[in-house]
Structures are given as C-alpha cells and as structure tokens.
Amino acid sequence: MIEKMYLINYNTSAIISKFDEYGNEYSMILEGKQVFIFKQKPLDIINHSFHKVGNNLDGAIEAARVILNRKYKVPAAFVPHIEIILIPCDTLDKRGSVWLVKSHIEDFQEIGKKKTRVYTKHGQSISIAMSKRSLQAKIAQASHLYVELSKNIQAIRNTLQPVQVSYILENPIEYLPKQ
Image (cartoon, rainbow, N blue to C red; front, side, top):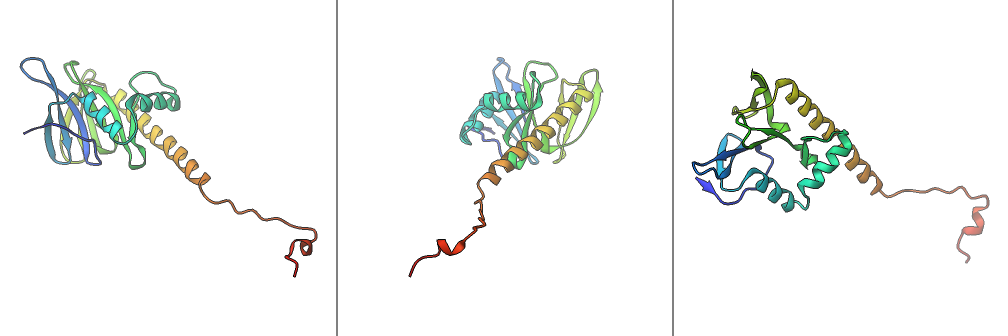
C-alpha cells in the first residue's frame, strides 16, 4: 500500500530510497516489524518530520558538525531526548540514501568491501554502502551526539529551577516589620 505522508516516530527504524521503473524516487520505511511505502523521497520525509516538531534538518546537521567537530555525513538528532538520531548512509547502488535510526540498530556485519548489512531490533535487515568500520564510527558519533545534546538539555532544565537565596543579616531586627 502506498501512503501519502509519513512522520518519523519512536518506532521508525530506517528510511530507504527506492526507485520505480521510471527512475522516480520513493521511500520504504521500516517501522517496528512493518514495512511502508511512501511516494515521498527520504529527504522530503525527513524535512517534513523535522518541521512538524518545530525544527529543521539543516540546523540539526549544523549543530552536529559543531558538537562532533566533523563536516561530512554527520548524524542528525531528530528528537534527542528519546534518542531518535538519524545516521545517513548510501544505498548499495549509491543512487539513493538510507537513514538509520541509531537506537534501532541491533547488530551489523560486513558483507563485502564497503558493504554492511544492518539488523534492526525488530528483526529486519538493510544493506548499505558503508564499511563496517565506518558504520561503527557513525554509531559512535551518534552516541556522542546524544550524550552531548542530553547534557545541553539538562543544563537548560537546571537553569529553569527556582534559585533559593539566603542572606545572613548582621542586624535582622532592622528588617522586621514595625508594629
């Protein structure tokens, strides 16, 4: 069944480029144990989803570049407090993209030179054009991004706590209300 719109959610494991016989790109979504097909391109789905939560992919990528001190194909935090961190990869034929959700990666194995099969927590698998070592590095970057963003979010929350101030007065009698 081809759906019209998709919003990335907690159960999304991957967004994968597919192409029809005319070369039109569409998306295959792995969500839990289900597979959905959408007419939208992966980047359109990702941008739509970011906008729905009041954010944008470009800003997430720029923040990741600064935090990770990296420039190329950095993970993007969609909803960091529930660990939806997107890892960009290429399809095996390098025509399209695969966006993996870090928290749904169960395991992976090398299947060839610069080719890796990724297994999700729900038992599905995706083959990507990336070496096992590079994928390990991307997962580590995504984990580091999650930790750093969590620290930043916690620091913001801490500044929202009411501050209790105590004073030691030399002569407290002066400050008591007069009768």
